[in-house]
Length: 151
Image 1 (spheres, rainbow, N blue to C red):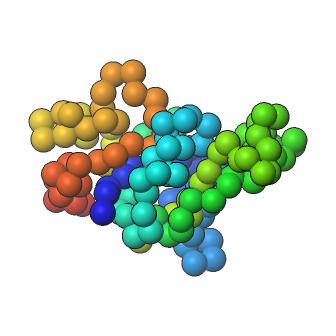
Image 2 (image 1 turned 90 degrees about the vertical axis):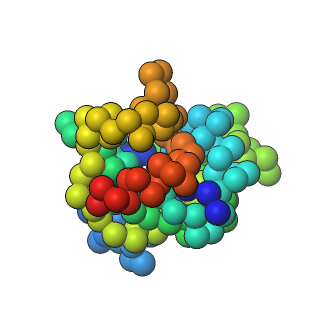
């Protein structure tokens, strides 16, 4: 089992949005970074725990705990010419972009970016590294345990 942090812009999909969805599950669409895609496609397993992270908002931070709820499958937005995630190079027979379904386990208090940065135990956490822009990153078991202690 691996642990993950997955970023979502709350104006696109927030923890509260997912809490109101059927089965509290959302397809994690729109990932257009090869490394993040590879994490979903090659490493994520059903049941892996996820830190649901709000990004590109006034208060970025961890807003919930979720879990991977499906195996990877093609992201249909890559084929939709009306979607901002459309990729003209993607073919149905050879999809470029994958997604997984993510199920909300529980909403948490917001653990903001400043608070995360304040803990030396998290200093090596990928989300806190300069220049990191990945929307999906691995979380070590030690980082996960420490974050759980903050909740």
